[in-house]
Length: 414
Length: 165
Image (tube, rainbow over the protein chains, first blue to last red):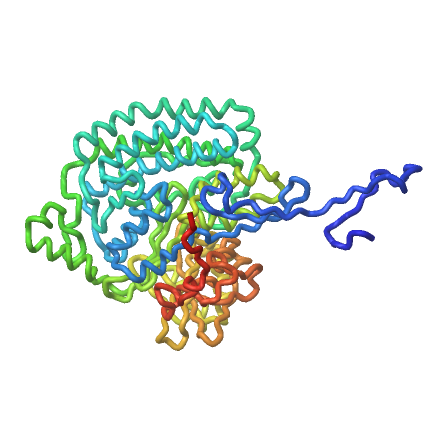
């Protein structure tokens, strides 16, 4: 035998053919293919080792950690306030929601009540961020699959919101706008007007995105019935967000463990049936409409009031007072140099970010720094199910599956 | 006391070393040899029904006799309650039962704990480093005795000299 490799099978094209001896033989073997780390559809630097039989995926092994920066270790070295900008760099597409999840966790640790207006502001901005996240996801996923037009339409509308963020906090992506106990600054009337304009402008645009895709035969062919995962498996793998809801589980922390201003708003949680890529796409598009609804209700219900809890030992003073008032300056200085004294204990606080459940597990032994901070990143958990979901599909579907997780490696590798 | 903790306490007479409720979070600490039994109960008992794994984590307490704490945070989608299951391992024998067969998602999460803290999981299907490189030789970065700036491994990298023009 010429081929001793166990994986190799030798076929004669037709053994009964009289000239069989002189016919060539066909050899098949499993092929090992490295996908990434530099592949445009891996949304960052991710390598997957694919074992292939023909074009079918037999086994895929994600190799992660190219973007590992040791954020959890860094957290142990800084104060609670100093960690907020680090959270921007987790899921760098949607920094606001990371800030939100982190601040909520610290507030739970401190048992800190946030003023009502701040809760509304947080909800509004979080939902704006959710729209940006879903737009980004939709454009990237469609681009991966080959539908380029949607990308331009999504980015056109995303730009409006990024400019809105720019006006709100001075940054488009790394925002750091949330603070422990409240938010950094209030919405100005110009921002509110712009947001209202956007809310009127945006819903027809969502219809437009759908027109491009829902009657597109290639899009349907490459999403319907691709990367199917059953509800039971999805729960067992710990998937969350649209990836879990696509399988028909209505797990949404905004409804299950209501927080911020969500319990005061009426909205639906879209749930899929088939657990395939198309259902997850549909959920995200429906969530765009729901986000618009939530923002509208918050803008209507929001009353004037403070935007920061008044607990001088923990919360930062308003910036304009820092520069004019001695006590406020001392407060600011002490909070940033020593931090505040957190009570000893441990908490876990999960927040429904647009990718899924973003949670922070904080262990405190007292003092100004967290003793241990663990980030439960949805992208990392979703990668755990990659092999299971990719098995039996074609190589080209691997890109679809990365896309359907809405994976961002900054969050996955931390 | 939290009803879940009460239930766990009633079911297991030995092996439960700590029941804590703080800020609404319930946490059970079990001894290492009872971990699997308690986890099976939490997974399969109809009143508990913990079907969802949230995260697996670890905490280093260098001054304690049993140095490492391994944490599984679990949730029940149907019952909508959450619980933290913890166990302690000494440094000399850093092995704990893997719970990957109960919650599939624990696979990657336990690998991360191994990578970061050096705790081995018995019967884990694929216990390799996940975030750090496979040939990483400095140890386990999230241990408290690991310096923030690393142990000098990076200084051994070859850097290109300035490219001559």
